Image 1 (cartoon, rainbow, N blue to C red):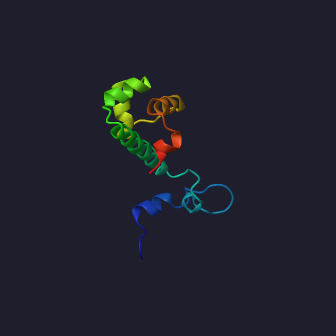
Image 2: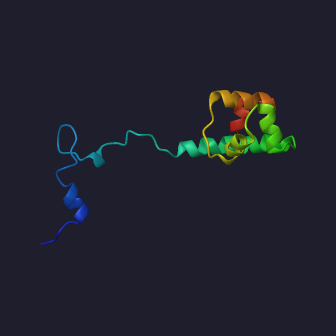
Image 3: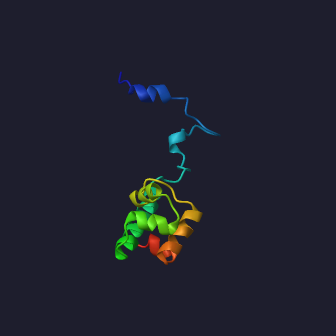
Length: 105
């Protein structure tokens, strides 16, 4: 007699949802992929870096003109923090560009 792997035995009969015998894994995934967040952060980070280097500014100067803490600006350029709409507006004003230019590839 062939035995099923331990994980299959543990989940057999438990992971049902709603009507019928469909297991949870056979339902379509409802949660959107988390892949898009890093891409947006990365696009913003590269846009900030591109605009800053185009003007030959240091990170400190860019942060000062945008009214941001230099460490926070550095993290934005790294793509390691989320940006608020207020911060995005400040950055656009400091660089004198439209928001679409910061996200352009």
